[in-house]
Image 1 (cartoon, rainbow, N blue to C red):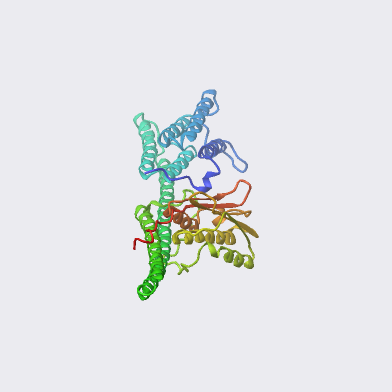
Image 2 (image 1 turned 90 degrees about the vertical axis):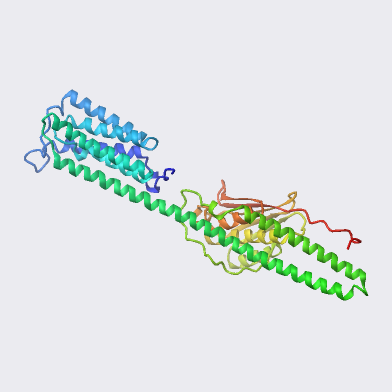
Length: 423
């Protein structure tokens, strides 16, 4: 299992900085309770003989260096870092003339335990907790073997803080792991929902083609004896429609068999999203690139101007490519209206690309779906459509500002028809 990514709150400050700050706070507290503060008649704790001596101060300095080095190693080598922090805690305690490792010297270890338990697999967190508790027990045992006084009650309290730090970190890890699994499942549902849309569109397209074939066949049957030329033309139309429909079905079904929804997951580190609807609203399968201008006019009337630019000469497209191209444009324009916060966007349809169709939607807004994360379920659907057609898809912020969605869909060569005489 891979390590979970760091939490957004702790991304701003490195763990080594937190460890150094907490160690410094513990050291300051250690000195404060050993001097008489305002309102006190005596210090809360009497300072040990070594505390202010040169050898005691050198020991504290060495312990501090060890703690800082351990904090820097925490993200890459957590168990090594824990060992260094634990040794620093025990080393700093030798100058304090106390019978246990005080909590002030163990706060950095508690924080490191939280980091390890919340960002690493459970096995690593359990080992780190065992190291911490073992160090506390070993410190008491060593003093008992030498007949020195020990602060068992205080050490039990310090051990409880270590267990609590681990529990909080482990709960954080479990919550984030569950959220990540939920995101993956939601992404798979989004892909499944988009495939259902595509399947329904293909069903209606095939039904439309079969209806035309049936009408043409009926017409050919009625005039085959009296008007053989008209019958031949009707049969040629039947052949062309049948070949085109069959080719589209083969492309789409082949792609659907090759791709699995479970393989699709949203990018790591993105914000949580609401799950997509499992039963998408019915779509009009007749919509295609010919309806882009009408979509632009409707969106412009609603308050966001859509400038459409056509490049290249119009040419007939297979139904699944025509429909998917329109759906990608429709979803991208919808994202602009919902999320970009801009009064206009640009749609470019390039039909000049050899063997393909290029689409680009750009805007000057403040980012993509969900505040610029670029991971909305609409993008998942657009990417799935392009992938099923063996095309390319990309979406992301532009360097000059705004957002760009691009898709390139390969357009297969039209199916070959038989010579007119071979019927």
